[in-house]
Amino acid sequence: MRYKMLHTCIRVMDLEKSLKFYKEALGLVEKERKDFPEYEFTLVYLSDESGHYELELTYNYNQDKPYEIGNGFSHIAVSVDDLEGSREKHKEMGYEVTELMGLPGSPPKYYFVTDPDGYEVEIIRAS
Image (cartoon, rainbow, N blue to C red; front, side, top):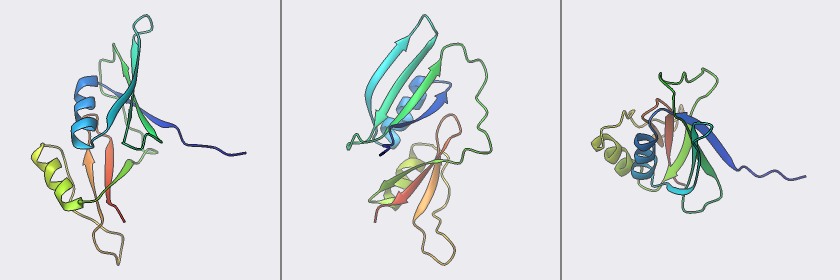
């Protein structure tokens, strides 16, 4: 039996602000949108150019306070060829960005950028 990863879902407060982040900051593209006005929610599926895995943004119409990000969730991770350039781009865009980091004894190879809802995205230097 083989399993294939399909998507990860996160809930967002402001769909347009989240779409802007994931499209402009990470280069993801909208693959599919499903509106369910009678149930008061919208699903938007984003993917990178490979299209093998998706990020599902769930927007509930009447959410009046930010979602609590539990202490069991850690982060989403993506890779990029130009780590330093990507970090500078995210800083210039006004997003919260950490310093470059590495595992103990290793050179820096990643940083984190925070999306509009407080989800952390780890940006890792492509090997």
